[in-house]
Image (cartoon, rainbow, N blue to C red; front, side):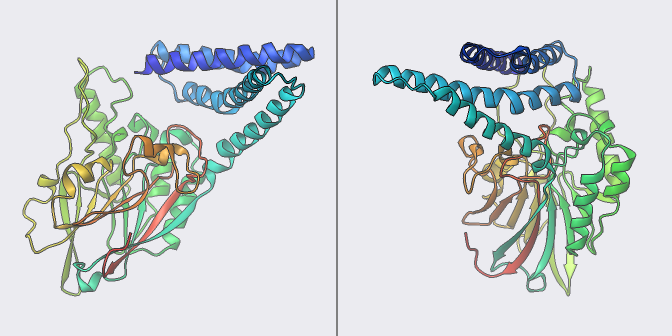
Length: 394
């Protein structure tokens, strides 16, 4: 899969560079112009080759993604407008002399927007205030406040803990009754959880505690460890690190939240992803199980469920009437959201926000971080979720 993606990226880079060179040389550009066209692509291609050769490095990944976002995307915009304008001009027998200038103008606008998204946008933290309601919620939990954090991906911050501390300060300022983390603490390895991150995340407090579940990245399957045993040891280390921060990790298990004699079950599962064919020799972590998580929970009790991948909701959760509310993450809205639209909707039926079924409600957080340091519209966010006893409203 990565090989196919890399070949596609090489093709996009080559296309954008060829057309930009083809059009700009008519303007007799100087040496600096050639450097601007070709040098970023050469650097990007070099790091793509390193990644293809198995040199797994977040620095290389960051250089490739940053170069594509900041240079290749604007050049593609220039290519599309310029080539399209030339084609339309020939079709309608018009000489659009200024089409390259128009294309260059829009390419510059896109470049400025992209620069904002990879510098300012990734550090802009929003607080989404959400209400989840059910007539079955125990009375004493009416108004119960839960802060949800998802998808920190600490490896993307290297050793800079400033934004993580901003997240922690924002969480504590909301004075929640409960704090939950819905997976993906790391990108690839527990080594990304540096002491400064542990110190920062240990400062989150709520009367009913901090609970978490594991996301797909927390199983450390993307690092390329040489054996299944090492992958399992890395996963266990992620769990121990979360526990050292005072978090309680729910691995297909549940806890009881008790308030004024009423009980709400808090359950959490390991990651449950959309089924796909298993590749030969691939290590696939054991999937989470709602059945295991709710073992021993009476039919009369009601559940707040933590899971990472929202696919789990359709696959297993909606058929269990005990689960009133499900909190998930994982999607990041593919890092792009324009109003109520995200390209994530093309591949994920529930990609962000609130969804209602006959038995319960799902809320999907688009998360805080990501392997790619880029956010357009889908700004980093935490959720302040208020539970209400009443009828669900979409």
